[in-house]
Length: 192
Figure 1 (cartoon, rainbow, N blue to C red):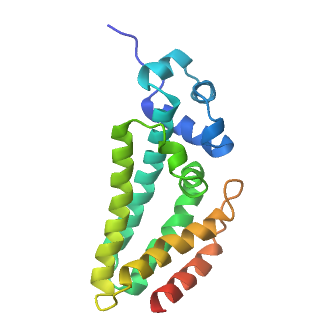
Figure 2 (cartoon, rainbow, N blue to C red):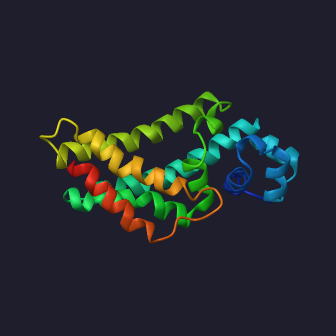
């Protein structure tokens, strides 16, 4: 019978997120990840073939967390006004998962996926597609007569919040007061 694992895959992924949020994906190393996770370097390589695979898993984990919240908020929306709550997922996610927010909103996606295995890139694409699909469905429900409805919602619910939180990242957490500004800007983008 083998020894029980001293650390989980989730702990390695969280350690990767913390290190890459702090130092950037280019400065993240397997050694630093192992040190952060309190795991032997050989054990890290036993579970993940490369730094690229771990960076991809960290990005995907953040994207899954954000995407689930974003899609759920849009699915529960009853009208345009309640759909505006989806614009607040970005700052709220960044406040509750600062490392995940930094990965998603302060760095390029490709910095985490360029050296990723093909299966990881496919999973990342699926996450991004799911968010975009939820926007397209919301546009059909709430702006059916507006030929620019989908792009207005994309700007309002993703673009504006992204730009607003990016100003604070990676070093600071977006303040709660920013939410009102984001919501007002999102409303204006939709009614324009």
